[in-house]
Every structure is written in C-alpha cells, then in structure tokens.
Image (cartoon, rainbow, N blue to C red; front, side, top):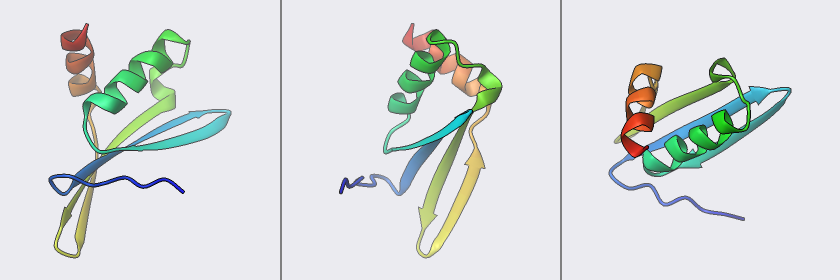
Length: 79
C-alpha cells in the first residue's frame, strides 16, 4: 500500500485515457507537469489527459480542472 501525504491541503489528480485509463495522485504541481511532458513526448494526445486540482477545506473538497493554458505555460518554463 502506498500513501500520499497531503501538504497545504491541496493535491492533483492526473488521468490518462487512451485505451487504458491510468490515474495518478500528486502532492505538488511539478510532478504531474513532468508526467504530462513524458506522456506527450511518448505520443499521447493532449485531449487524452486531464489534470484536476483538489483543495480540502475542513470537510469540504473543491475539485477543479487545471486549465491547459496553465499547463502549457508550466511546460515551457520547465523546458
């Protein structure tokens, strides 16, 4: 069994849907951005990837789709 320690009450869910579905959890934003780069370099299409941010506040969770404009910006900055 693996654990994910949540820091700053926020984590990210990256899902790849290209035939087989693969979902990974990340406790910082750099990790899924690196994984997205790896997927894209391997031929995965952008529309086959989805990145969600999950914020926890007391007993309430807020889930938002992380926009591709921000993903692209981080990909460029991380070179």
